[in-house]
Length: 155
Ligand code: RTP
Image (cartoon, rainbow, N blue to C red; front, top):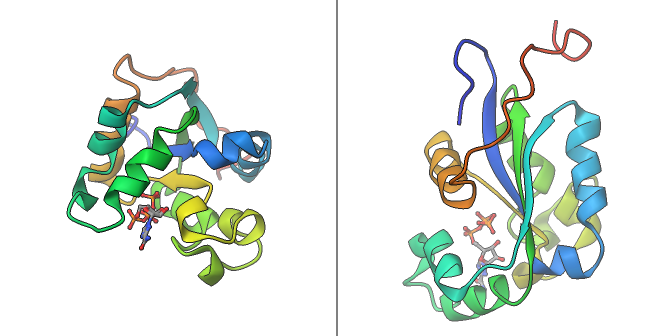
């Protein structure tokens, strides 16, 4: 998840099926781009039920798990890898709270969603989670196009 020799890190962010169906992909990408983060991986995937189960396997004992898997595999998602300083933690903050009703205006969920089960986006919650999820969704790897730290974004 990290870029050797730099202070950068990488996270997995996904636009869930509701974001794709509602045409919010561009708005979500724009928020990360305009913040200064770099898009190093991007693709649309229609997850199988098995992929959804694997992605959410830590929640497999929860009562909402079957519905979550059903929803996550109900249409294409947009998989992204974003790179930059503190992007794992900052990404979660930009997403907002898991519960949209607890999310502040200005966050993605606070601006675009209402219901817990239709909360638009996913973001890795730790370095270990990011590494694991990036391996799962980008087994082919991501694009190492950002060779230098942008001096107009970082001091
Ligand atoms: P995500 O993995 O999707 O980024 O969400 P998260 O870490 O903020 O929240 P998590 O606890 O991992 O839950 C994953 C997704 O499951 C749905 N959920 N439904 N019905 C319920 O009580 C319930 N709780 C969680 C949400 O869509 C949440 O994003």
